[in-house]
Length: 455
Image: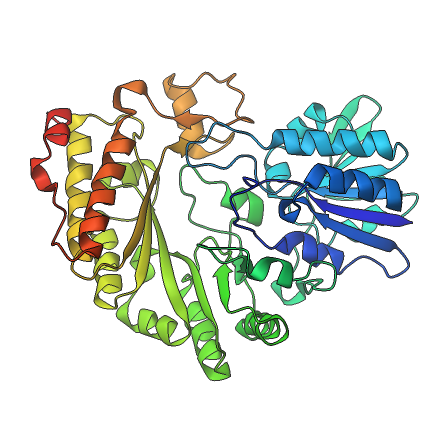
């Protein structure tokens, strides 16, 4: 049997930012030795479709596994990556008509049944984690009804098998660094780490817009800190990787596991740095000091709302003071900080926008003297099927239940659609003045545009 593993394009080609295909690399290490295997990450190809065609022609695979990581680029973009999956599957079926086509990955898991209907060339879909299932899909005469967590075709019907057990974090397979070489990614990026590291899977927070609990489970499964650092050390010493990004939904929860990880990194004395998304109310001076000693070089926050009402609406279980306190800590420690917020939330009015603006002013004032605010990223809520906020909008009549959420759909009522751009302009100006040491946000509360908007 010959297997071709393909990461389909799910990034803006030409943007230059590359992401190591961590999930596919782990699955690659599970392929039995008797199977002839080739891999292709189309995201790092100069001419990805020509490369895929040539690989199919030359290798003539019996099985092709397509990994679909992202549905769309977020950040308000209206483009969809569905065409990448669909075109890849059609190309495989055309050039390798007898090949078994598998599909999986986070984006596929979110819309598995719909994608099986949309892309009829896919024979079997893998929803959720693949480590326990993938090797079973490579047998010549598999019995699909006996394999948990897959979608398969029974004549004209798509059958969805119940999920099976999730893998123990002690048993996460290693990366296949021979098939997917880290050197191909290490020096490609300008702004973000190309190499992801898993500290845990799953999330118990249930934020209103998020599907992390669906993808990884509703409780956190923790990876032993020694194994996390073993992987970082290997990548550092064998490939010279110096910057990592934790793929955890929240890197600093639970606190005891996070502090154990920091102590292990400190003990190893590795010449590395790392980033990750942090939970504001779990950040303390004690664990931040540990993290800095352990190599933390930039911190990401996803507070997501600037007001008490917004935080409640999104079920963040945070207060504005939690967000301000975390910013004070990162400013005090002069740590590069990125903050993410969602604007034009359901039910917002001029008074709520005024409160959000005041909160934003406080954040800019905290960071301005130090100049450690790398970016404030504003987005609108991307609506996913089954997410609590989506269900709420359908119940209230603000979202047609027949809306096709496979394609990018954002909650962004026209009346206040300009808020995002006004807030971006405010932060841009404040950032430039801070970097030039010209004092706090020059727009201040006297900005006539914002004053008129929030009357």
